[in-house]
Length: 300
Length: 289
Image 1 (cartoon, helix red, strand yellow):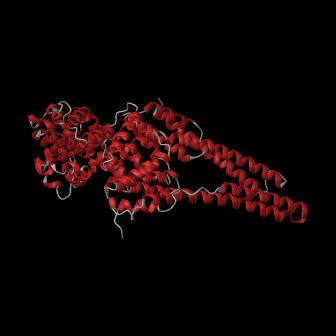
Image 2: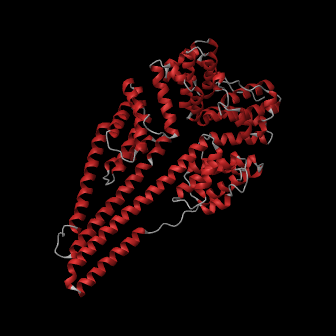
Image 3: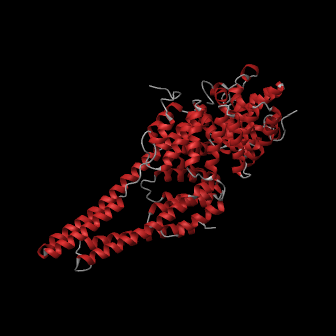
């Protein structure tokens, strides 16, 4: 079987097409039509065969009850299927949060290989799929999903902001620096003065990536309270980039201190996976040491 | 601001009215179709059926709009827009709905709002009222209400009530978000009953879960674990967790909310809350020269 790294495993363009929800079947219209048919045919039969009035009455009442019961059953079935789908999307969200990427990739593929029942489920699954693809360093595919979502769906401000953040980060990782700069400008424009730790982190990464360590250090100092408040343990990412910025400036004592903080908050393997630029720091500066109780893959 | 009592009585009245109206509509359908009907003609029965159908569809449409109004409130509460959320929830509770779930959800959202506003007594009262209802397929609502109830009772100092609420949750399969909330409440309960060993059981998993929480809850949980480690003589673990907390939040704010945590910084003068503040980089800017 193909691994998630392989483009055959998660063919993004195919999944985007296959997951388009089918147009809804207008069951209510059909029911109204059958109802009208029952009314007209019973009236016609009664007019032509007055002797059959009792039978026709009984038949039409049974038919009407049948229509109502069938409508209720169909609605219940549809609601149940939608709930099942939403449960799968919730399970996918949990797998992504728990960084169980392989299982998340399988589930996302399963959900998107057939038309989803609701557009919301499709959109949420695509957003999670973009995170999974970024985890497997398939940034072009992640960008394709971000672009598709932003172009085809009218999101609320905060959802659009987080998708744009993901896209800008993927562009930086893929060295599309001009596109990333444009994406960052768009983020600044659309965030309308709202404080965003995600945006500050993307800008910090851009500064490090483009060789502007002084700007990166200044940006970190200005945004640290925001990182702590909004990013929680991902503040470790910002400390890692700060360490890289100090290292670029040749300030090794500062770099070591920042690197210790980064690895105190976030596992080294995660930092190296997210930012290849900080991999070299591991050979130069000591990482925080986990206490015995938390070792063997702890602080994942 | 709607008090818990008023909200609960409105909610109960809404449920009763909805049940009566649903019963009347169903009775009307039954009457028209099976009992020979109100009129001697089939068309009279049909007309009555259609009128009942139109009434039900209209009420259903308005109830659906009401449900959508209430469904917005969790994101408003999360964004801190309490006034708008309050307005929407009040409106949703006041409006008539033939759907029972819509009323139950509105009451739950009001409990979530009161919890976010730190109005613990109101939140606890609303959750207790909700849990007394038959929730049917809304089991998720029952779990979330129990979590809010347990946390609110803890804040009110009712350890026994909180224990009862928490213990009810072990019968359920929890989502990840609920498991995180439970861990947060559980640790807050356990330090109050000096259950230090239980707090440290499976500490690796607990730390990993704390990393998934929002900053405030994650820091508080790790600080409580650090306290348990310190009380149990596991100095390395205590120091490591304490350092993490310092990197995440303002220690002064944390200890103001949970004074027991001052003990973590009081034991070593070099790591007093003020020094911890500096260590986090909040008070001292990094050198960019």
